[in-house]
Length: 190
Image (cartoon, helix red, strand yellow):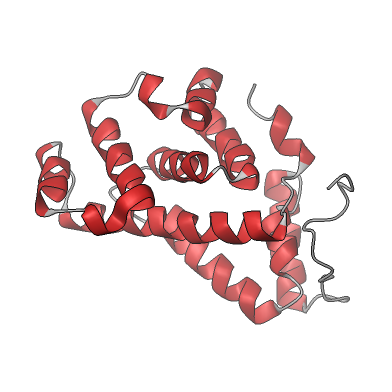
């Protein structure tokens, strides 16, 4: 798709006007991020779907957790890299660069997290997220034991699985609809 004004390859325009609460949410995004992420615009043809998506995303990625925001973004990028999701690799790769202060880490996460300079905790977390993505039915107790051994709690394991699961779903929707990343992401935190 060459039209960068279009958020997806589908003709599902945003509601116009947006409901007041949705417009306020978009205004907050614009103030904090300098843009409204295209994933939100793409959902804005149906406010109930947008609200459900945003609520789950915000809970998984921003709520209190034993996982740092950076670790959750790292999971998002690794899952998206495996799934070859253009939108999420670009958007969440930018978040990893910004949160880590390390452009090379963001690039490694997108290309091949196994070459990144990671500690044992991060490596186990990302290996688990990769297995959730590639072969979730093959996960066994020994996979969870490895996470516990490097310090993850039961709740942390739940959060790792849920972040990985959410991005597997999101990647498939983004890829199937031809969702385009906001151009601003490409230059962020470089």
